[in-house]
Image (tube, rainbow, N blue to C red):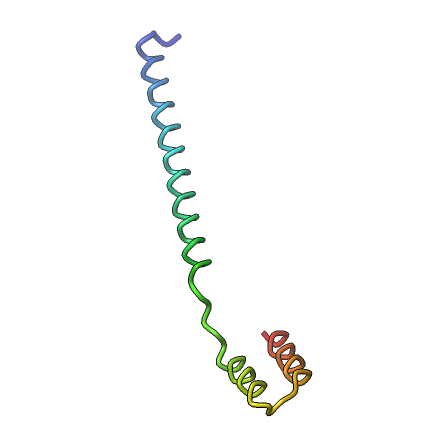
Length: 78
């Protein structure tokens, strides 16, 4: 049977490991939330092909139906 002093040392080690685990989990959680927020706030780069398709629709070169068909084809091709 371990002595009372050894029990306190073992308990201290367990508490230290548990505390470090909690700190690690909290740190990873905070980093994850920050990365998520930055990715969500950053505007996505527009695909140049889709931008050209939008321009062609705005200029009247293609009809809205043609636009939808071509846009769907582009997205399904990814």
